[in-house]
Length: 138
Figure 1 (cartoon, rainbow, N blue to C red):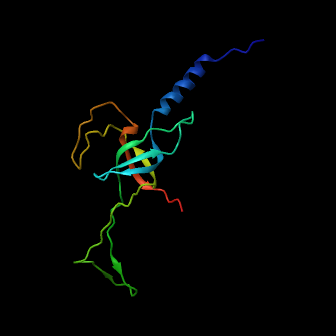
Figure 2 (cartoon, rainbow, N blue to C red):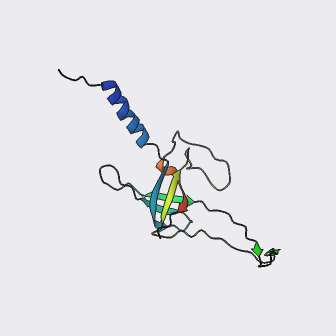
Figure 3 (tube, rainbow, N blue to C red):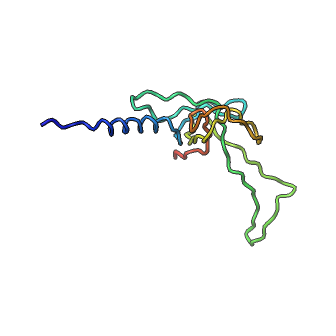
């Protein structure tokens, strides 16, 4: 007796896999270039299922953790740094392995802290990545 194929389930399994492969959540990348405008070009580390490299993601912005520093001496007194200050810089360098997340909507018009218009129906797309942290490889 010949076993019948379940074409409907096969179709929806393939459809699901195809849709899911187009949704980008996060990926590990290596920084390949630090641009003059403080953006980064990165190479995704995960290969496609056929073994080929994914294309580079270009001109990504990087997030950072804002830190306020207060000095505490060994007897428990705290001191303000006024008039001194501490400076924090983003320290991403070529060769660093970073985590890139992808924003929900098109960010091609995002500039500074201004509201921006969404020009496409693009969602969770590789063009809308942001570096959110460095992975410690030590």
